[in-house]
Image (cartoon, rainbow, N blue to C red; front, side):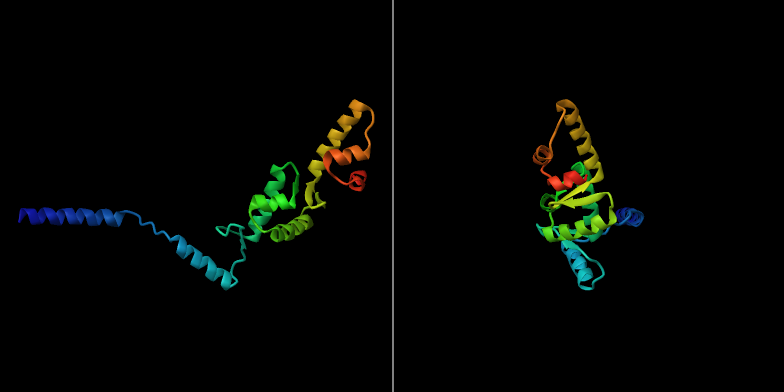
Length: 156
C-alpha cells in the first residue's frame, strides 16, 4: 500500500509540474508554408519570392532593403547588383526602385544606378580636392574616373 501511495504522490507531483510549465507550440516549416500559401491565394498578403525560393519578402521589406543597401554602399548602387544582393528578381527591384525614387526626392537614377545627394556631395568634395591639387580637371576625366555621364556631371 505504501508503494501505491508513493506512486500516487509522484504522479500528483508530475501533474502539478505539467500544469505549471508553460507550453510552447511550434508550427512545422511545412505548416508555415501552407499558411503563407493560403494567405497569398486569399490575397490577404502580397509577397515577393526570393530567387532561391526559400524566403518571401513583403513589398515594404523590399523597399527597406533597397534603402539599407543604398546606405551601406555609400549612396550609389547599381540595380543589377542590388537585385543579386537582396536575392530577388531584377523586375521587382526595378519597380520598387521607381517607387523609392518617387518617395525620396534626394535620390536619382543614372544609368541604372540609384544615387543619393549625399553621394553627389562626396563626389563634389573629391573633385574639388583634385581641382585644388592639379589646378584643372576636365569633365571627360571625371566621367572616366566616376563612371558617370558627362551631361549628368555638368548638371550637378
